[in-house]
Length: 506
Ligand SMILES: Cc1cc2nc3c(=O)[nH]c(=O)nc-3n(C[C@H](O)[C@H](O)[C@H](O)COP(=O)(O)OP(=O)(O)OC[C@H]3O[C@@H](n4cnc5c(N)ncnc54)[C@H](O)[C@@H]3O)c2cc1C
Image 1 (cartoon, protein in one colour):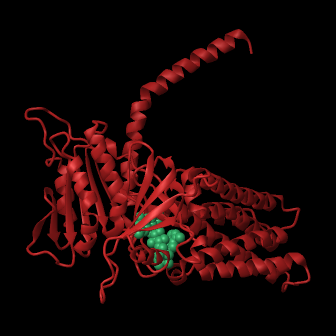
Image 2 (tube, protein in one colour; image 1 turned 180 degrees about the horizontal axis):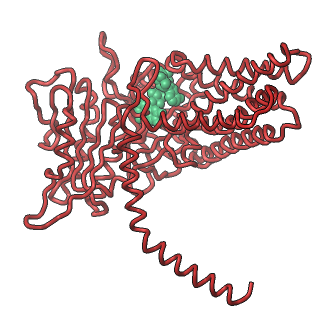
Image 3 (cartoon, protein in one colour; image 1 turned 135 degrees about the horizontal axis):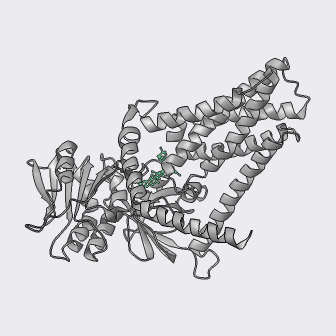
């Protein structure tokens, strides 16, 4: 290239860069408006409400699934000249979809790498798994029709049959009943069958089908990478080979066993003393491995939200656990059996995982939680109060709206909420207001103060969200300087009914 061309390209580049810089604010604004538009018309409106077996489906999710199905149908049918080609294509397409399905199955790991939520990652896993199953069934039916039956003398046919059996097994073990009631059985069989399917596909696919072979190798590499890196993080995070021993957790609960009363309102409090301090953002969770809780717990890893928050690395992590039927119930037994009121058990963590919403940029934040969903709200409250006290955020008002069945769970986290309210007066003004709605009608009268603070109030019945949100969004609840023509800032509503659900932001 001659010197004049270089000069011309450089000068042109400078002008293009200047132009891009000048339109950057408009592009940002356009992205923001587009975000609001997409949220309003696609992400929040439901296409199908929650039913016993299906739903809820949002319009956006339905559209993306239709698009995904359409693209696959197009790839399957476009320019097909014979039934054999159609059958081969369905098999190859199934293997191509397998890469995404298997990868998204490592939910915590790949959702972090791809910066998507755990919920989205699971949706990708589910959608691609259905697509793989459908295409494989189509492939098997077409091939056996064309060949008039499958001769099992051929190795490739034998592995096709094994693969088909794995698909049926995967579908059966993914049934909601099994998934909900024997989660560990579901998880382990799902993993074993998935690996068998991958192996069977490898043995079934001929060496001439290069695309399928590349996809299977890619899947295997991605899976191995996820496993090795997670193992590496586990060793590093917990200093497994250190001479000081493994991290331990103190496990306690808020009340002893009461005859005739179930434990649905019991909270198990776990404090994991880390061997290596960890920085955890608000809204992130860890996978907890406590091998000595039961004979079987060495094979279990459970995800829990971290309720403690600090602007720097934390040396101990707090977790609130709701007793269910498996691991958590056993943990409760340990806590109750401990003579000093708390049991000390070995506990290793993997993570942190999950995304954190940048709440500091909003003027008004409404956090909506129900029951144990409070576990996800607490770290955000801590962060918001800290940022306000250190003038590191724009936030001027935070309202926690918490619906509970009975007051017991609120009493169990009273100390945490009180300390938040106390921290919130450092600037002689406060931003935090807490409204607790008790469904069981446990309080006398309609309204009661919660603790010694006027800013935490307990109400009887359900929250009236229309009224609450209208008042918050109007900006009138924020104290403003008289005669100052202040512009109203942005507001955000974040909600989580259960800890495992995604934080919805609108
Ligand atoms: C991101 C995330 C954060 C969570 N945070 C909290 C929290 O802060 N506090 C809390 O009490 N619970 C939380 N949960 C739910 C918690 O992980 C389960 O309640 C716990 O694993 C139940 O263990 P169990 O053996 O006692 O359950 P079981 O009684 O055997 O099963 C109860 C339900 O828990 C689910 N479950 C069981 N094992 C697992 C597992 N290994 N991974 C994922 N889900 C499982 C199953 O869907 C099942 O329906 C969170 C879940 C997720 C996905």
